[in-house]
Image 1 (tube, rainbow, N blue to C red):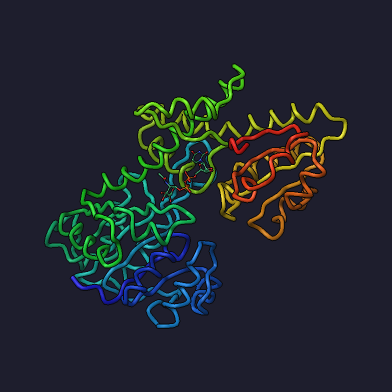
Image 2 (image 1 turned 60 degrees about the vertical axis):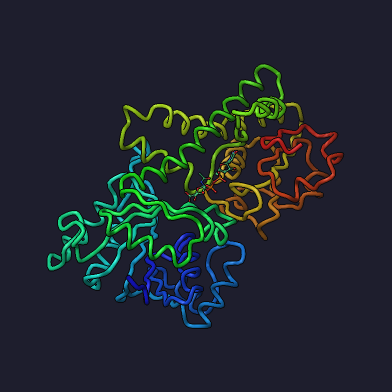
Length: 416
Ligand code: SAJ
């Protein structure tokens, strides 16, 4: 199979870097995005998301004409769907995945697909989503054959190739990570491997679509369960007056123990979401996976109660909250436990709040409107009597530790 034109549906945190990297290999890429502002930004050679070095690659592939963004779906040899799979609205307890973006993408590309095309689902999806995608395509195009019926002879090939890149390292990991390739038939997998080989240096490992879906969910659940273990240890250690960081360091000296780091909670758009897709599929079996989610989701509230206790020691508590991003050295505040903690403190009127976040220029409106002050590290440390370390940003690691000496410090990241 040759891929002269690749269409990437959804130009977000995964779609845009993927489109840019494929275009940088000299393949014509058309990115389809419903957000007109994103389309205009990309076509002007700029980016609408934050990811190191992505701006340089996008500028280059747009200027050489290999990448173009549009709101209209066009014909292509391969279609890669990289749209969000959030939870369904309105029922917070069920945490059911919302596949409507995938369904819309299927309905959008259906009119332009032709025999010989490859359709890939990159979005993190519950088990069975790729089969559903193939079903939606078939419904819209009864004139074509699909692998769920026609097997190896199908006109259209469909596969799931889940993204696995780490925010902040997307450009490196897109190329160097191994890829799990799950075709609905072996011919679908083979075609997908050919496409990924054009830009992936890691190995492309073939399986079926359902296993590929579960593999991605498993990777993030593995991390979530391990972080939950560390978070549970941290609360046990507080109770027993043991330093959890020292404890973990010691336990990790064992050749077969490797405990992750406790923190203020688990944020981001993946690890706190994907395990629920497994729980939603198999609620009876996925007991540990569910408990890990609950344990990690409870951690921000635990940190808030620690801060309240510390603030109670002062007549006029001034609380410096160091870091708002969901993890170190990024500017992404979405789904951040640090933001959740700061907001809970503001709602509870615990004291004067100062937020320090070196990766942003100003506080977002929702925080600024709650009367939270935005300051640099030095001035926050100067004013505060309680200091809460919420993110282990490099600026905080580099800070003079003496500046913390006379403060009540709650160090959720083990930075000190
Ligand atoms: N965290 C801890 N303790 C740790 C590690 C992380 O508290 O020891 C917290 C972080 O502070 C953050 C959250 O967990 O709030 C998630 O951070 P992360 O760095 O573990 O992961 P993400 O969400 O940035 O990216 C993950 C990655 N998955 C795995 O490492 C298994 C990435 O490879 C996936 O592509 C990405 O999810 C995704 O898109 O699914």
